Length: 222
Image (cartoon, rainbow, N blue to C red; front, top):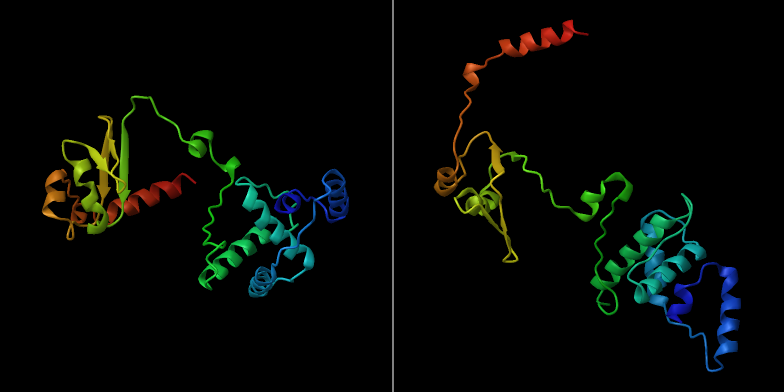
């Protein structure tokens, strides 16, 4: 029955599909699953989103759920405004709600990660190796926090080894330099400070006049 619903494209095709299955397999019976709890939760999710609980939308949410039981790759096909995003968002909300309500089998917590594959390059989408010998500067522009800077100690020492939480290590090449643009190092440990070279830029040496001169030159070029 899961396969039947998972491959159901249109409502009008369902009776024909059932007829073909019954003709080819006499023992076939289109069993009805009890989705009363699932349907009521879908109804609640639609109400929370201020959406109309149409039977067609509820049916498509259930169809998506059944399809994902037999396929780990699913395509939601339809024009803009047909409800594709609503269907998977409502299903994710429903599965989360049922899991936290104690129905942990077969329901589960869902985390969604959305991206537009056409908005990124192939290297960004699938990953790539950069074989160029250009120098790379990895610049961290923000305040130093002991929670993350301490993990950089093995990167900043002579080993240049980044140790990850899963026990894996990444060796930094000689063409990679780490740079930290910070206001102060008040919370940095002596180990971190000792592994870094320091360049202090005194604001008293700059003052406000260079800013005014730069703005004046920029306005003249308009």
